[in-house]
Length: 408
Image (cartoon, rainbow, N blue to C red; front, side):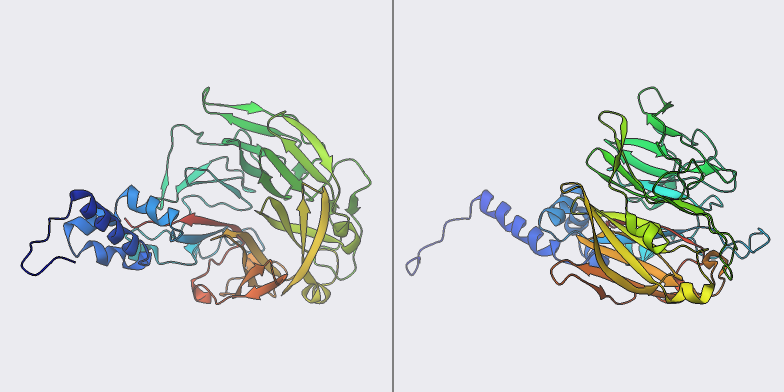
């Protein structure tokens, strides 16, 4: 402590720098919804909150916020005609307009039965369509707008739907799927240097609408419609009195694994519960390097009333033990549709309850739900609805992705 009458020495410049760093750390805790207001206080804070360094600081300190983007397909009547467009694209967690972005409610293309892949650069690739459109769409999740990127193709190599779309070692791949109700064993990867599609080894068992996920350099493909040759894991294909379609489709319980490093396919242990319970996988997510697969009773395997009473089962594949395990069932019935992803370090599920056996024909706003997996308690915990039911997309849920948010 300075004696009475003494003058304190001026603080060195590095102390001022540290003071500025303390300020930045404190402001990094401010929720993203308040960043635009914060930027209006002075030029210095405006430069700060819009800077890349501030975004990196929030990520380093664990204050980075993520948004849940949900993309749905178009709505079709029974005759195949399109009905009122409605919303196709929403952010379930944040109001993007309040962050300075234009509202994105529609897809620039009338897609149906599509799949998506998220790149390390934050670009969401959307492709595959039962209505014979080969276009590949790219949504920039940082700018929140649809873009064209000359490094990537404008279309996929063939008309396909129900395929697996993913990034393996930063390479865009599309495998399996089908066209004209016929499954195909095809596989393609995009060569960014040559700017052309290259063929991959064919899928061992032809499947469409399989669930899949990427762990390391491997693509794990489980289940799906299978009209190929008979094999031990195949099931279905029988007449079911009272079912919507009458005849049950043919499915497979196989786990097929593609290694991008060696460019080879192999078979893992089948998910036998699919065959035992007459289920089909609807979506999957990778969490802690394990594949979580969400399965409902096959839509055409039983009368509609029985379908609504069946639970939504969840299975986990661990590559380290090369084995399957089962989680507690989701507290929703098989008449629901859902999408899953890892959001803010948690495995989450968002979906809708549709009592219509053909959920993508449902026009009225459906009831919605949101669950989170508690690994410690080993149970699903219900979370508050993220947005009002009426704000959800009206079409069939197609993709749920979690992306870091910034203001614009």
